[in-house]
Image (tube, rainbow, N blue to C red):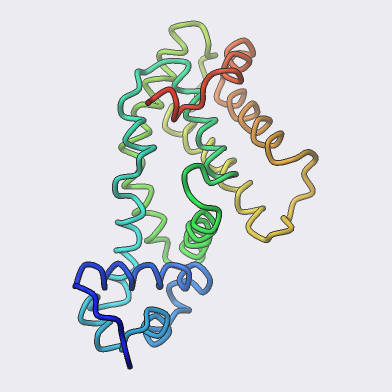
Length: 227
């Protein structure tokens, strides 16, 4: 099989880039090494030289997807506050619904990878959450505490960490509903309206006051606030 000569790092990245849409479309179990090699334009022998197993290739997709995410790096610079708690929620909804700094195709691939992981052994989703959570959840919990102390949040029995995951589930489930181009759920309103309404809904659910929710609608996007 004729191949373009690339150095080892470039070849590994080319294999990963070719494999991600295959895994997204067919899942880990449904994708064969022959298909992965063909998509990357290499032999199976060369594929195994770079990735000894299909699992190691799958994990590399996860590593590259989490490594150096600018949005997560910016989050670490924010103070714990009402504004940060609301900003995290609205940022999460925008990223799931619009893609944020990802292209729509990349967002589609990531969401499909997650869905396939849920239906298979859950390893990809579990590792992704284990990577992202320590960088976001502690700040979110601290921001809820700051909001409560400021009178912007009603005390609730649910833990701050659980409230983060409840918010995540709402945003992610809405994104899954838009994976088919025509959508699945007969929502009313365009995507921008849905994004704002979902943010309001989640903020009410985690206990934020109406005044704080209203203020968060006109606040700069969380990415801008971290610049």
